[in-house]
Image (cartoon, rainbow, N blue to C red):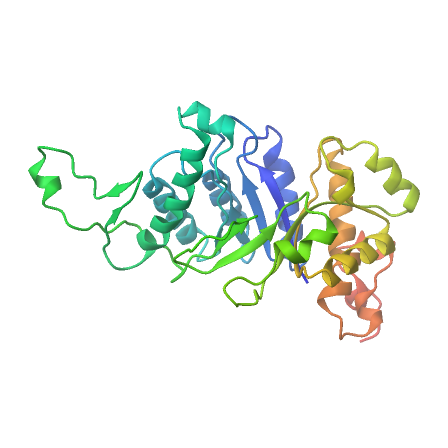
Length: 327
């Protein structure tokens, strides 16, 4: 099982100090990616700007951005995504969100129109990132846009969007996707509120292909003791308790084993939860990274390497590499 962090809200006022600490620790401890989304604002702050900032703070952590797609022309998202992929040396994961009814209303769109524009945009984006020029004629978008009377534009048959991303194929990850035919491979992501009994159905094979990555979003709290975990859970705001992973190390390990048995092999953990202090969130992340995650990532390693004490999780040098350990 691989571990990632997020999504972090790009419009949060206290985002940067928390994100700097969490991204640094996640990279040190071998997490796969960090996720950034605009949040619940009517229009949403751009996650590409925050993603570029994270890219400059890290070297290996993949940057998963979740822009709202379908409200404006898809070539804007194509250009921003390509630029971020270049800035991060090919570490972009593109995980777009469909417009909510509130966001659609801001742009004077019917929610159904916005949803249709979302899926049409997903047809355009991979073609915009490809090396070859292309054209597109859909229900909402026409590329190139032939404006009547403009002979110069009308003479253009195809367009080539620049810059091009560093990756040959930009990974597209979608939460709760419908049965849609897409031009690029898509990783399915089960949402934060998906019950355990529905995970297998949400992450089922499509078109006869068994997905190699079966991703799941979850709110996660790890504490040193069961009582401390119970106290922290009472502070949380806006978390679905039915799908919350919360407890001491052994309790969280048991809950994750249940998710793995249900089919998930990639966990996106929202650690910076509303109601917890920055110190409480950081300590939860340390325990997740140093005491919980090794139990799943190194199953064939000796237990002395995989299992760490609470004291070890507070040190930057832990487990079999801790000071004084025999080599």
